Length: 348
Image (cartoon, rainbow, N blue to C red; front, side, top):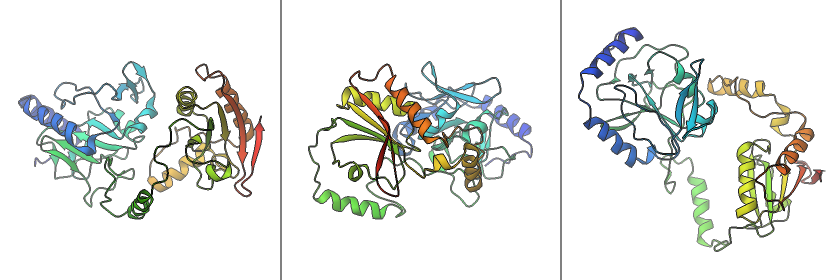
């Protein structure tokens, strides 16, 4: 492995000079093969359009691609549609260009800082794409704002950077597309229970449409059991859950689809009492994340709101006015009490 200079500018010059001298073609073909075949690199992707001597990544129609903003931050597009800086969080795999990476995951970029800001928002597996000879055994120079990567993709294949030197606070597990076996035992209890459940599976052949024409949007809080609380069974309704039971853009889209394709003709938006999204502010949520993960998310809008009832009325009105919602759909708002199990209709 090459020995890097002690400063970033010197290292960039070395890598760029070596790249200008290398032969293009075969290594890019090898990278493309790994991208197509390695199960850890599948799923929703954020990628990049290769510039100059950067390793070429074959693009898919649904890839998120970066767009540099005037302040050097990155927003993301899919096709011609701009999705915003936070869209990178939806990617299972984030492929990023790099000039060099060391064994700790420290990435040397072109010096603009755009990717460091963007990768702080990523939740998927972050993979730097390199040519041969650009993974360093010796430490590269690192600054406080640098965000480390989880893995590198070389012509020889994908290498996870999981050695003792990797201390990236925002490390995530790689995407797993075959969950039939748990490598580390973390999900063994869940899989064992699932096998018992599958031995006498009771819901084979249940139709996809909601038998009782109901859709419920509620919080992800584990104290809410919509089936028992509302007297429902599997197949009766469509359930949507997120933090706070909020009508976000993606939830609105899902309800619209369910109203046209899955027999949903009545929708109950049902947040609950003692919800963390009403007891905290966005600033407090970001502070908690920084304390546990070391990541600054102060620019993130988390959707907290102490005025739950006003927010619920707003969400109900917004859904009722959604242009694409099936015209026969009835929308109401309710609050579930986690201490009594009772539902109070707030917006009839």
